Amino acid sequence: MTEKKYTKADLIESVHQKTGLDRKEVQTVIECFLNTIQSALMEEATLELRGFGTFAFKLRKGREKARNPRTGAILSVQDHGAVTFRPGRKLKQELWNIGVVSDAEDTKFDDEYPY
Image (cartoon, rainbow, N blue to C red; front, side, top):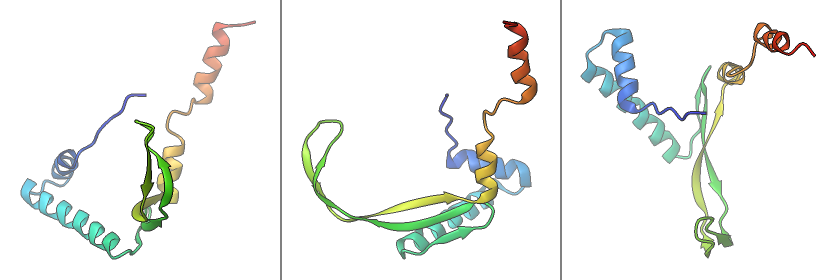
């Protein structure tokens, strides 16, 4: 699987192309949107975007003994905040079907190997 990256600049360009709005205006709106999400999470609030998903703040418990997987060193980890994302039903269903082989493609394989 190839890893694709979609940056904030790509997002701005995509919205600019689809809406025809000025690129600077689109950039301002997107940055304001992202800052609002960040502010909500900093307040430990849950942000629900219907049809897309839910961002939530979660407090992770620390541990006395943890291991750095890269070096193997033992260290302690303090309690810390983390962000969780749960995809909405529509997004989850669309992602579920990525890479699924259709019945037509599946029968093609059977024709090549008749035994």
